[in-house]
Length: 249
Image 1 (cartoon, rainbow, N blue to C red):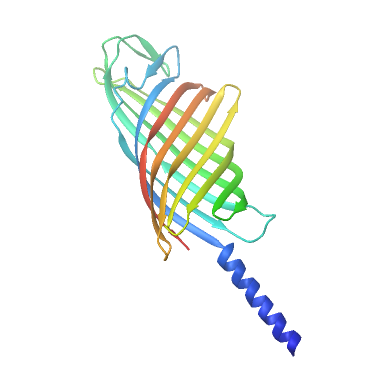
Image 2: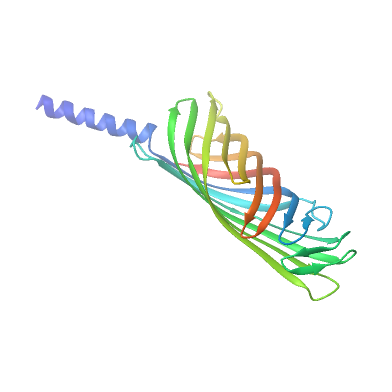
């Protein structure tokens, strides 16, 4: 009987410890006030987002995320993140350019739009778990991109589409400030191959209440270098501040 009672106590204690320290999940939503710079090319010439297409002001977009941590050390934890990004502009060209087989001329008034819808599947392992948390893993990022350019003076209009799936290196660090509910965190994903480069960096401050409800503010920057991805070339930088809420349980 003593062995049964002792075994029961050990089992209950172990289950409690696992649930308290290792099993967890989080879901959150953030708005991202970001601006776009750089250039894009599909054809004989490139278009500058700021100088040619009239971008420059910040646009509000959003991203959502969810993750789950479990107590099995061999199997990775999982985070999923979805970013909805779109922007548009109006400008006047100072050169002749061919974009996706359409010829646009100097002094032509154009409007444009860009979307970069992204989904990140991130299996990761937590290699350090105390007041400092460190995660390492792989970010399988899927990007569905589209750039549309239209003339305001004629009926010319064209779309450039590109889709890419990227296995990026992923790391995250979080530093808890004792007895405050505050944390500092940063995560980054990166890959470079065949002239293409992709990076996604976030850094911010997190506040979590004792019931798991929390808020975060920070800065996010994406840099994308395209070298013949579906015949599209370019260098894009998207950066700006974000603010979000989450629930951790």
